[in-house]
Image (cartoon, rainbow, N blue to C red):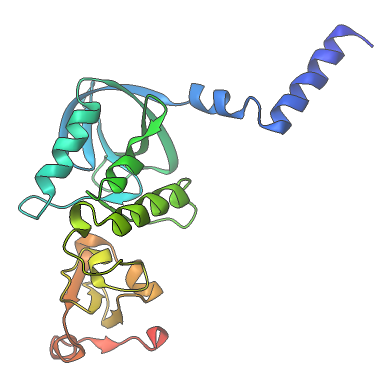
Amino acid sequence: MKKGVLIFILAVILISSGCVTQQTTRESFEKGLVTEVIDGDTLTIQGGDRVRLLGIDTPEKNEQFYLEAKEFLESRVLFKEIELERDIENKDRYDRLLRWVWLDGSLVNAEIVGEGLAIAKFYNEDEKYQNMISQAEQQAIEAKKGIWKQIGEPITKSSGCVYLACSKEDNYAASKNSNKYHKCGCQWAQKIKKENLICFETKEEAELRGYETCSSCD
């Protein structure tokens, strides 16, 4: 058998076994020097592009743990070269790059969630690192770290509006773009974008605002 054929067969075996997938993938990552950290989930790289970290949502300015989340991201990436991995969408409507951020082989997005400084939040069902992010969040919840410190018991997607970034007193959620309100554990509540989120303590409060109950949540 010719040498060239042997090399080709060996390459096919390595690729199919996953032995070179990691290297090939990492070689395809973009790289960027972080010049500014805007907040806990947004940064700027050299050249002016802003990067929004995928799979997470950190507190907004004037919200509790906003500063801690920002300072944590600064301590990890500011003035360092990071690797940027694209997922499904390239940019959001604010023209920010949507990326998984890697530093020294560690996924920074998951680190922030693991410190209890962000909640897991996904806008596409097939985002690559959902399991990793969700596991980091569950560990933070169980350890009552960061934003989970004031929660009396562990919170999951199926319990508590805090997961959606409401207050712990709230029990129902709605979108500004809908006339339905939902229990916070409802699958439709999980899909509400933060900028459209409205929270209610009671059904009566939601109905007074003109919202109707979601039959799918019952």
